[in-house]
Structure formats: C-alpha cells, structure tokens
Amino acid sequence: MIRHTVVLKLKYPKGSPEEKEFLAAAAKLSSLPGVHKFESLRQTGKKNDFDYGLSMEFDNMEAYEGYNQHPDHIRFVQTYWAKYVEKFLEIDYEPI
Image (cartoon, rainbow, N blue to C red):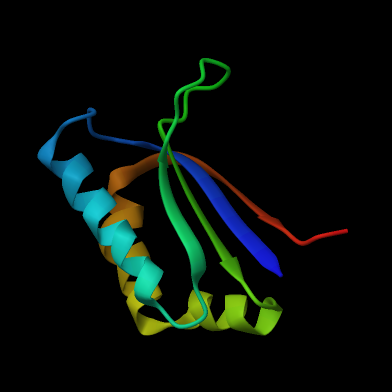
C-alpha cells in the first residue's frame, strides 16, 4: 500500500472563489483509477503555515504511478496546482 499525502498553501485567501474552485477540482481526483480513501483536509493546528491537505491510498506502486500519469491528474496539475498553490510538501508512505 502507498499512502500519498500533500500539505499545501494556496495563493488565494480562505473562502475565496479560487479556494472553492481548487478544492472542487482536487476532489475529482478521487474518481481516478486506483485511488482509495481520498480525503481533502483543512489544517487546524498552529505548528506550520499550510492550510490544506490531500490524502489518498493506492494498492501498490504501479497503481500510484498510473495515477501520476493519468491524463486527468496531469490536467489538474497544469490547470490548478501550478496556478493556485503557493507552496507544498509531498510525502508518500508505505507500511514498514
């Protein structure tokens, strides 16, 4: 199992139309082949300045790589991620 997580800060304020548009577009990633347990998350702690998180699981590395190369994922990155995200940290885990 691969757990793909990313925390991010948008270039736009909370509650803005751009925030809503980005989060709606991100939620559509849940329907891509191989994606399980998709979650959109809002940061509540004060230990960093990220505002949101995305988390999802894949059965194996092959499924994760298929997701990364899926045309809808690539389109999301080009259309939304590159234009809306100010900074991010991506972490991918597998059980020990």
